[in-house]
Image (cartoon, rainbow, N blue to C red; front, side, top):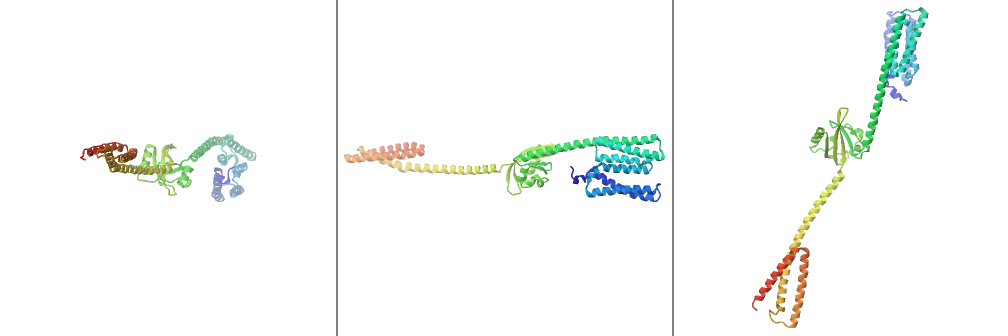
Length: 417
């Protein structure tokens, strides 16, 4: 059932309001002219027609006041018009009255209430039947004032008008049905598309060639912190950080029809969000639009930033370790030069004492010197193992040191006692 609020603005109710105004205007114009004697006729007939019109107007006022608009769609309303026209026909001349044209207007008006071909033809036949009844009544009252041919022409003209109105109304009705079906299909398609958009996990907005947003899904509304009704109609760049290159990027998008850029979104909350903006153009009803997917990559950006910080710290640690290793090498070199070489010289002198090159030694002294040599050899092995474990090159240096020690010992042997 159609709500009364919608019926108030429907075509039939508009027709009734227009007809009400027209009846008042006709009464205001024809009434004074008749009373001044410019129209022939009886005062009784004039008051009958005027009273009938006023009664009809009162009925329309009551229906409009009560908002009972469905009464305009009933057969009663149609027969009120039919009886009113038939009485006017009978009073103004019967078959010879030009008021038969009001039947044509009634048929045209009926098509505003019901556009089905069969219903309009039925209304036409009812009008013809009423016209024939008026003619027959006048025939028995005073006879025909027109020829039978003229009466037939009037009846045929009424039927032809009804047929034409019925055909046009049927075409109009089919066009309205088709339009309603297409509208329903479009609405269903839009509902489906909206459901698809709303089911997407990423914000999606659609904007026109002037960058004004015309559509957005619920995720975009949540992401930007703006209700959808407020988001539609605003410019896209109002929610993107402009580093000076944004106008060029949007111009490139319009030129190429697609783009994939990295932007900074500016939600209403004030928190900047890094997004991947993927945009493509499409044509709808001859107008170009752009659909944009805003993929929030703030979390990934934060991870990348943290990775860069960790890499920088790791690089610094590696640098510190290399520096520490260099210090260690220098320290080990100092040990090699400052400890091992003197020990090698001591070992050489001990060997010379044991060999008797510096003079004779008794058995106790020889035994003590052997113990010293074994201790020195253990110290040498411990130092060399330590140096070789940290830096193999010091192992090579230790061989050179040994050669240097041997040379120093040989030189000592050549010295005079």
